[in-house]
Image (cartoon, rainbow, N blue to C red):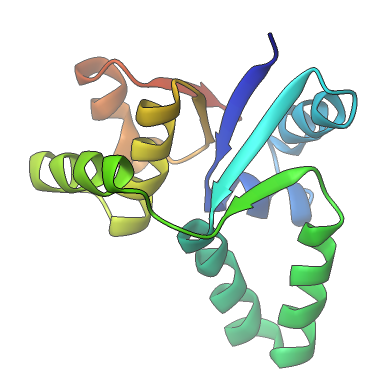
Amino acid sequence: MSATFIMDACALIAFLNKESGMEVVDDILMDALLNKASIIMNKLNLLEVYYDVYRRCGERSASDFLETVAGTPINIKPEITDAVLKEAGRLKASYKISIADSVALAEASVSGGTLLTSDHHELDLIENAEAIKIRWIR
């Protein structure tokens, strides 16, 4: 059985901008291409990156970004299921985290996958308090 990873915005940004931790993301993307892993990203988390690219670089760059992501093995989930909604709500109510982080964590929790992130600021506490697997890219 292949590993399942849930990608959050900061992991995708690190990969696209060739930041520290991009090697970890690149290795997992290669595993996904070889069917040794699967990568899921909720559309809400994709929106986090899209609006940042749009704000900094404009509409054309944001459109190019979406085309780039479409060419990767990242499976974009267009919906928030009821199970993810409830788990994200619980996490958001229990911890001081963003809605987007609560959705990424909930995707990992519900799927049994591993959240791929570098967001220590919001998620260090959760790693120790919850049974959600986290793979730190840096």
